[in-house]
Image (cartoon, rainbow, N blue to C red; front, top):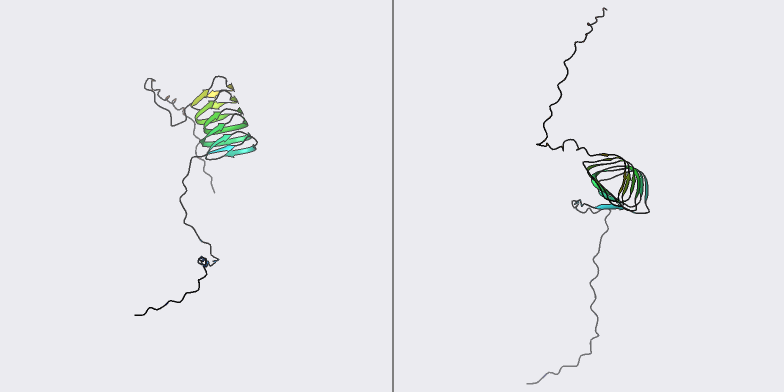
Length: 182
């Protein structure tokens, strides 16, 4: 048998593999709507820095820490307000709870508690079921610690107080009806 000779082949140039062409994207004039994810509300604390000055009304639905200055009214009825050690507040304050580490000039009302820490200073009236004033704190004003309506607890040791009976009604003269002739 005879053997077939293979002719030497010329060397093939080495070509690096090419990347596939990028896919063609067609631009559309209609906007693409992404499915809306439900927003999970996180409990966050907002800070107002030392250099911030606010004049007017401040309200919100998040816990707030103030380090700057506020003049006017602060209303966070369902949240905690912390007045930082550098804060200077000249305002009427309404919140669920108030912690004072700085200076406040104005009345403070809280539905749960008011706490004035050792370096805190308040000149104004306090109204809350719970009030704590630390040793070393400065306070000048009055304190009203009445329970909010509907949250009063009945004390078993306290005698029940009956409502006062109304005084008997005094007879009063009733004017006679007036008829007008036409």
